[in-house]
Amino acid sequence: MSFSPSQREALLRELEANGDPAYKAFHEKLIPGVTMAYGVRLPKLRALAKQVIRRDPAGFLAAWNPTAYEEVLLQGLVIAGMEVPMEERLPAVSRFLPLIDNWAVCDSFCSTFRFRSSEEKEAMWNYLQPLFEDSREFFARFAFVMLLEHFAEPPYREAGLSLLGKAKSESYYVQMAQAWAVSVFYVKFPWETLALLQSKTLPPFVQNKGIQKIRESYRVSKEEKERLLSYKTEPSGGKRGKKETPKPNPKHGKAKNEKSEKR
Image (cartoon, rainbow, N blue to C red; front, side):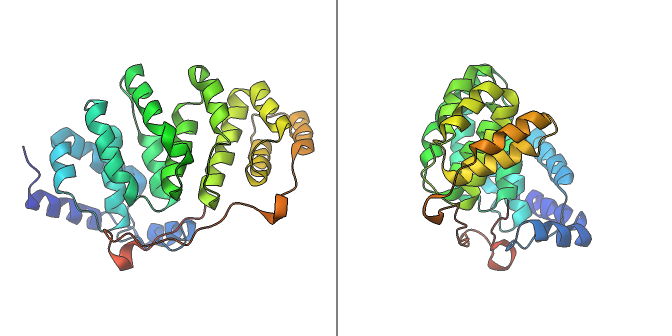
């Protein structure tokens, strides 16, 4: 089975038909610099991805050439949910990562990703290892968001904690993902994560933002929240996560896809 030009056009028409101008305006405020082409909500994109997965996901990926925010996200959702062996899915992930240039696509892709077995999960874990120290902003963010979404569990506890300070990138969106991961690990493994915070070995921005996020959690007691304040650190030389100027991806249309992110 192959994904025909007429099927592609039908998908594009469905995206256009499900656009919501009010949602488009609202969501664009959350991801500064991004212009959505249609304004399609995530649940509808997930439903469309499921349709593609049932029909011909491999044909779709071979023929799809995304030129808009929602089209890129649709491709990611198909990869995240397709039921093929990981040795086929990981190359698709590698081809998709360069298309990610904002937090919304990155995080939706990660949260939607599904594994059919512990072996598949282990294959992804191994795949992620070099990405934690990748200098490319959204390659590294992808690794940390996958960590907090799928690997904050006992088999990966020690290794996961050791990775929380491993990023080489000082970009804002990577360090925000690190801090978010710190908060998730604290909720799951409070004593082990507290030891990490007590050591003050994390970058100051990650340490302080991680503590802030933990204190925002309703699953952490008031006493713990007060105690955590003593582990905040002073930024060295004023250093904090850097917001990198987003660079338009040449595979995207300019007006629709010159993106950055806020989170």
